[in-house]
Image 1 (tube, rainbow, N blue to C red):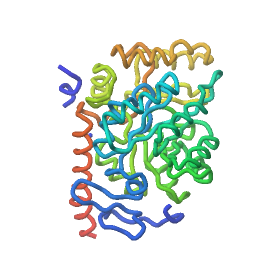
Image 2: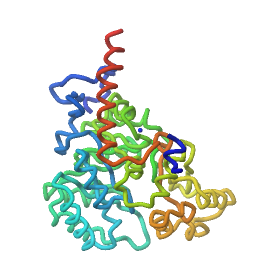
Image 3: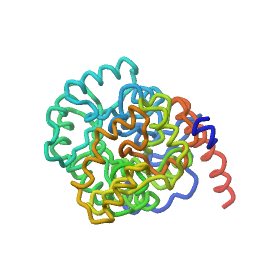
Length: 362
């Protein structure tokens, strides 16, 4: 029996609340309008996609099969540049993705402080040479990369964990920001601000489109994010748990079996907080941190090679692996097409039925 069977989805500054009704076009397309199972927002218009849904970069997960499936389903999906060992490998992965979809897709470039940094400039040149239309940057200050990408007509979305970072990103000239609430997998920053506050706080401070990220896995999250002022949502853990994700089936079954409490926040004592799926390794890391250990004391436990082995072999206790609190909302392992279709149909129903009835009752 599988886990699924056992468990069986600025505008203007300080803009006043718009109420629950999300239906109906507006002059500046601030609010979405729906038709069938689509929603049109500033995000969908700017990036030329059908749905206000992204699949952001995910290390070791953002490969051609999953990216193409999400693109074919009408979403904006991103290959993860650093998942590929070299810029030449990234070029080949881009071409492989193009054999699987004729829809637009992007590349994520995450800039991390490391002792031996990857050749970021070479990855950037590969992305430009490949004619990629949009890049998602994340991590450290992306100024150098934004300037070069924009000079070549490439749109940029920068992933942030705080409203102040979004303000800075807008000043750098990015086209949109993806804002990660505290619920997210990976690095949520050190402010611990959940999405319910972080999304509208960010929307109040910038004028470019906002993608809501962190703990979103179904139609309810999409509609809630739009109500908070976002123009799209990012699904991470939810896309990991689909048929096309090239990770071991046991990892997907673990996500289905987990609930919203099945994560750990490691590296807090190092001021580099990371949310990972709870397992034997994450618990050991927390124990070492409680005992006053340094990063050197956990380095071998958290090595990226061990995490990649989890995805390859399905041994979920071999290393740390990323997952958000959205695990509590994930109950199956659908195809990407089925997932997106369900999210959009249910979101349209929520807007057109429940929220409309609430608005009429006022």
